[in-house]
Length: 147
Image 1 (tube, rainbow, N blue to C red):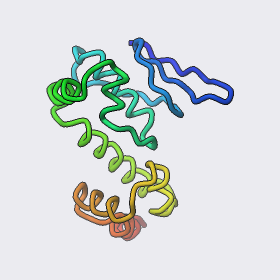
Image 2: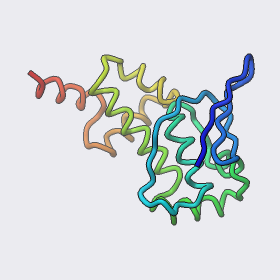
Image 3: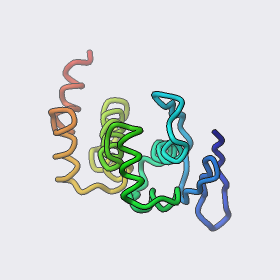
């Protein structure tokens, strides 16, 4: 498994993972698969998603990046990761939102912007589904529980 970020002057950065190329702004983060035998194409996509939480990427774009049809990509992703690519991306964003709410003083609006300009009501609804509280309630509970 090799991952490289190629920086280009006025062009977008390009992340190359095992020969698959993902354009965008890349900040590499370490991701460890649950099992080492994960398909290399799915591994490349997951590494890309972890490195680019704030970039909104469609499932079709991810499939295209690893030279697969959307259907085959979704099918293989679900087999390898036990959830759909869309669900996986949403979970990553909500975990990052939780982290930002608990570790930073960023406003909910700033957090939404950092996670790809997610619509306010959609973000609140998804966050509440994910952890049972709205982002504002989550932060208030954190502030009450900390001395």
